[in-house]
Image (cartoon, rainbow, N blue to C red):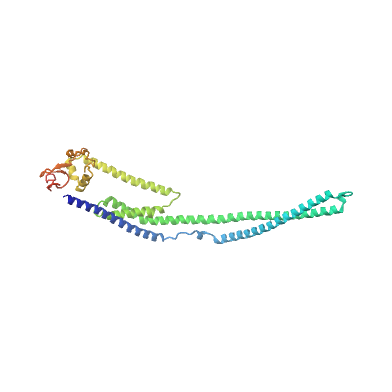
Length: 355
């Protein structure tokens, strides 16, 4: 009898593994096929490209103007460098000549009025000429500085024009990109939604049938399409849409789970109101076998294995009063009351009268 039970347990475990792999493999192939279909559907519309929205003619003109200004600025800077070098040389010559003149005046003994001395007049004239040269260099430098300032102002205007063109292109591109993404999402939704409904229907109605492996394969496929094929393509609109979808999904799934749990407890409560004979008739053998392995009552599902002493094991559930163990009428062997046959002599435990 133990060998038969062990073999049956192995077959049940093997059956669960087979069902799991069938569901997994079927879901994998369906997901691959779904990805292929979604990729082909995405090709119905061409994704917008940013460069198609640029006014290349205007941008090229603006860039050419900017390049011309850059070249002119480099030219003026080079000339400015030369002028600054010339100014530095002229100032140096003037200062040197002036210092020499001051020293010469101090050491020279003059007769009469120095302002009437021709030699002094000549040296003063030379100093004036050197000072005029320095002033000329400075005037040219100031003029170049004004020209460079004007170029910088022109550059600002050009950059403003270029930025305006970029903003116009980005605005048009982003608008068409949002439209494109919305179209892709709607196409994916039209393909995905029926599969989601089908997966939900099969899950609710056929998840425990003989061909449940195929049902779970479709369920895995629908979940994959929802989270991988649809959710990443949800329009964002600042994150509001995704958050709202998350809230709706959580409320719907949560409501379903809470409802199922409530139904389960209500059903259990109604079952426990019935007589022991009525409850025994509703207990399936697979349920009884699992309950025996878990040391739980097959009716109220609470643990009955509270007494560890083998001589004082309970025959009735201490929680709901269901008969759990009874002695074989033929050999007296203590058996789980919901098994079909005695584990010692093989006599049928449930007589026609009990049924």
